[in-house]
Image (tube, rainbow, N blue to C red; front, side):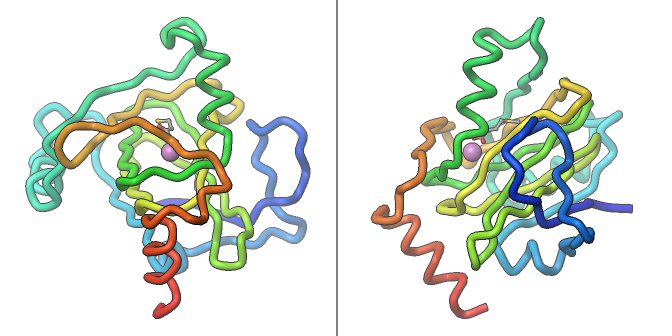
Length: 179
Ligand code: KMT
Ligand code: NI
């Protein structure tokens, strides 16, 4: 059980396909941790009353939450937003997402700038650290419903790469050097 992640091939075609390297090169939770990426598995069927989720929110100060349903019939400006989500970018704050239904991919860069694809399924909660380069895509199911969590008021601004001179980027890179 748990999360599946792997190194991506270099192909530019259809972002919704898995793009596993040949031969397959899996990435462990331990490797993700070293990049500052953290993961929990929860019971998404009970998210409205889940004490475990409440505890995580309390411990980490995730006071804000909303729910986004990413599907062509539910998301205004669907195509445009998906295109934006797949542009390599960073944020000034952590990106915290909990998949309530459907599935999707988060891609993150490792220390050598290689793409790691993280397959997110129902019940997966992930945090991407501020300053990490990443992107998001639906997979071939073309549907996900995700809780977006935030410490305090949400800031949705994304800075597309290159953003190497940003203080948050430099702090992130420095924090990776020790590990
Ligand atoms: C982001 O910043 O990459 C996103 O918000 C992705 C979509 S939320 C499931
Ligand atoms: Ni993002």
